[in-house]
Length: 403
Ligand code: CTP
Image 1 (cartoon, rainbow, N blue to C red):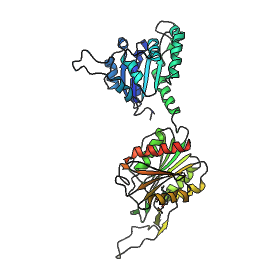
Image 2 (cartoon, protein in one colour):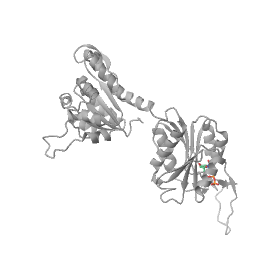
Image 3 (cartoon, rainbow, N blue to C red):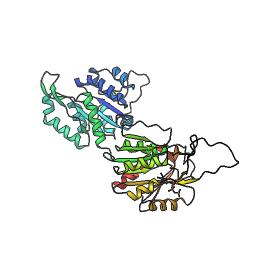
């Protein structure tokens, strides 16, 4: 899956012959899972039609602040477009548009949107070789980079003028892979390995029955997605759950019992930077598992239980470089119990869920947590979607490991 999947891309086209390549560019962005809106300088419509681009992007294409021929005369709100985008790409970026961008000129929709954009801006110049070498153009390129905009360098080759040299817009495939690499290299968890446990465990009583719990695994899967979206390689060790996840950075390992989860975690722990144990692991398991299905006989049945291994505690003992995060699900004396667990198990952070909070807990889409760090500072959060809670947890960890 591309890192561009789900990203909102604002493609701004200016009037160079390379504009004809933007049809392919839009197609590649769509293929990578991005949502694309196209804006054009008025003159660029001589090189490629808005109809082609709107068909490929599945969105209306705008080139003016409003359409005089449209009886509804809708205002194309550049501020809204600038805020909508997760990233803006100016391609092709002509000498004229580059110079105007560098100097704050604002005489068309592309330039107004550029000035309004708060997102990362990439630009792919395209012009004749002498124009590309001109000190004025070089000045524009430097100025734009000093604003934090990212240059996708032009390449060398045959130009529309017939001359051969530098000034050709990078090929659409190369533009997309340049942007993907650039985004990846800037993700804050890039190069980090994160271990996450999620879901319940099932402890067999006999071939058809087990001891389990109500955990759906949703919270752990959201944490896995959040960590992967920030660039980390994730090992997600999941108990029995119907949760699905499709992410090229997430490697899912399915387990059933607490012992299998323990063994999978032990295999991975030495190689990870962060471990987040959100699984609802069974604390006890039947001492003996019946080989045959237990028949209904007397009025009562006793099953003798023995403790499972405490995975979190074992990681606290073996901890070296890892940042270790546990969960606590409490019903009374929540804060004290969670702090006690944090210290007993040698954790760097604990995420407390209280079953007393409405909207928090198993099988809900929302959660309300308090994060407690190793210095016993408490950070309470509002009731939020589990995906927002996951982002809060990951951001809290990031702040701690970068502090
Ligand atoms: N946990 C674990 N292995 C177990 C039991 C729990 O790794 N066998 C982890 C959970 O994933 C969670 C944390 O321990 O991160 C807290 O689980 P909880 O059941 O609340 O705590 P316990 O240590 O079992 O303490 P108690 O039941 O006394 O509250």
